[in-house]
Length: 215
Image (spheres, rainbow, N blue to C red):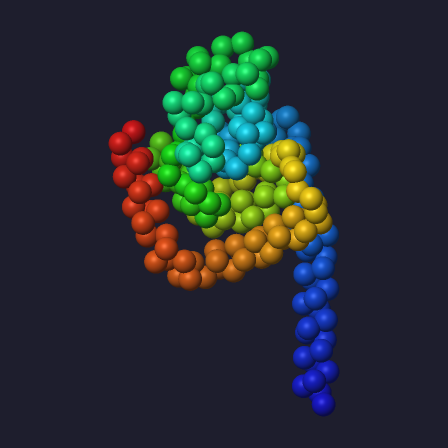
């Protein structure tokens, strides 16, 4: 009888925790300018063009000194050779985008998902020997999952969330939000038990390492 009561209490606590988590998991706000300026680099995880726009605007405004964009490939609809043709028309207020990109933007071309974005970012930071806080630019719904994956890779380094509102054509926003929350919970499990994905990540690790060595 006692065991049943304890079990029900634990289940109730779990359900309550999951419910509260669903309410608050995407509660991110644009950080103050002075907090952003304390970062050494802004990091964009691709998936929507609005994220790259935001990263470029932070760079152009001098809010961050350099920008790394992870996941620049066909899967994200962005390739290095088409980068300027895509983002120059979207950002007409940036006077000299070619110079800005040549000066201060680097791109990772391997990552195809959030876990790989985090791996690619860690590899780039280590190769460039960059330490200090980073600004993470991604969509509001994606932020919790992206931050969890990145934190697992770069340890105690401060991650400053910079949420972006992606354009969406979802017919059911609530379902989209629920799907993203489930992915976030799955990511928390995967970063806690990384061996669950190790076999699948080995090729990505190898590709990312080889890609970085060529730069």
